[in-house]
Image (cartoon, rainbow, N blue to C red; front, side):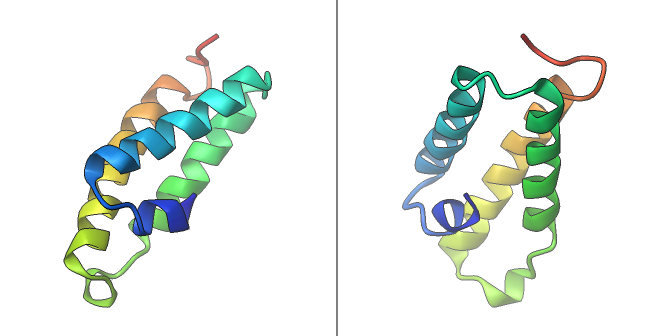
Length: 83
């Protein structure tokens, strides 16, 4: 997932990758708590990147993914698991 985000050609492509991953988890009936942990792990990895080590497109993709995963984190937080 991280490589797909880093090497996406646009922010829209980042969104498509994230949406597809989440859809696959839901279609495979992955437990909501596992989805929440997945979201938290990816978000943590994205937030650990140093912008000085990435090019402009990669940093743009990381920022977009952080925004999207932060929204998902709220939706899939414990006690608010979407069905």
